[in-house]
Amino acid sequence: MQAIEQGRAGAAAAGLTERQGAVLERALGLLVEGGERALTTAGVARAANCSKESLYKWFGDRDGLIAAMITYQAGKVRTVEASAGALTAETLRAHLVAFAVDLIDVLSGDVSLALNRLAIGQASREGAGLGRLLQERGRRQIGKRAAALLEAGRKAKLLAFDRADEAYGTLYGLIVSDMHLRMLLGEDAAALRKEFSPRAEKAVDAFLTLHGAKR
Amino acid sequence: MQAIEQGRAGAAAAGLTERQGAVLERALGLLVEGGERALTTAGVARAANCSKESLYKWFGDRDGLIAAMITYQAGKVRTVEASAGALTAETLRAHLVAFAVDLIDVLSGDVSLALNRLAIGQASREGAGLGRLLQERGRRQIGKRAAALLEAGRKAKLLAFDRADEAYGTLYGLIVSDMHLRMLLGEDAAALRKEFSPRAEKAVDAFLTLHGAKR
DNA sequence: TGCGAACCGTACCGTACGGTACGCATAATT
DNA sequence: AATTATGCGTACCGTACGGTACGGTTCGCA
Image: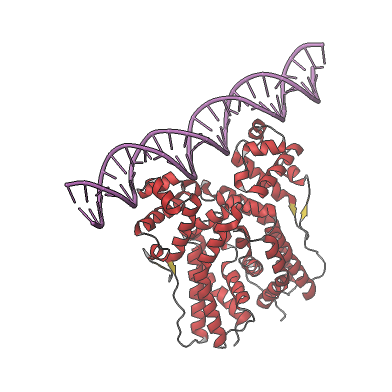
């Protein structure tokens, strides 16, 4: 588990007061606990011991509050930088397996699932603004890490592919398959995550079969 | 495009009046058009020229209406049975590519996306009842077809795998990757589908590289 | 010590929804 | 022809939510 949660970094990164960060934290808690229906302005105000007036002053709008929640949560997720040391076939494989485990950990997290459900629910109206926000903010860190890893593998002549994004898509599909959707639909995330553990190495091996250069 | 839509089959399959099927059709239209917020009992009654009282008599509840919509829609999707003829490497590959295209067609359909969004939105509360319903009803047909195809391929000694469900998971991941989630989050489904077309064969080739016996 | 800004708690308003009840028309049945 | 069932249209009720306004309080600052 290398995805680090830093308590106040999310607030600072988004240019928010510590108090506002605490409010967003409580809002995320409400969302995780009871879904979108629990995310009412009155409920957030009550849970965070602040007034609705402050909520509207700080975030402008209910959608602004949600957007701030997404940005705040994305700011909390930090991924380890790829080690710049020498890359062998074994270390590459280990890094890929670690990436797979971290990816599943992130996708199966309570807050991640709740925010994805919320954004998907709002996707029909409002032109997918929250969806894009979630996609960009959320995938940026994890995607950057994968891209760096793949690029390093290619530079070390351990991987072979034409386009890095396509290779990443293949890796992603092999790792995730339909697990994310099933979790979003309500299947027990913990059970699926446990069931996945032995599959991580298989997925990486499949990816190396497809894109490994020295096999 | 081999997923066939049969007008009244959905109604008959679910034991519904033709009139009730028409009502569900309008309800699906409303849902596709405006998302969950447009799916109000008054709106359905107005759009379908029926009374709210009839809605409650027929479907009991708003959730009952939604469940009926899912069942009705699932009853409309029929997939072609795998041709029982001789299976060569070329015909197997062609069947797999056709399956990939059909799978993306189904997943990117307006109604499918709308129902998935709805079920995901309701997944937090109510113990994932709609989610399971959608998963079982929706995946049954397409999954059965894939299983038959894979099993036939193994029997013809063209494919090699230990567990059919794991192989199917691999195939699914290679085909879909994160396209489904991106569409659910609001990315333009038509654009993604067009972008996917050339990738279908690559996905199948990758699957055959992993599980093809004669390579 | 006096002042102003920020903010909490609460009350309030308009709206919209789920669900129910009633009056009336239409069609089938006896 | 009379009766019954079905169902449409509408009105209604209770509730809950988003958003706004107001009085009182705390805290920093001069």
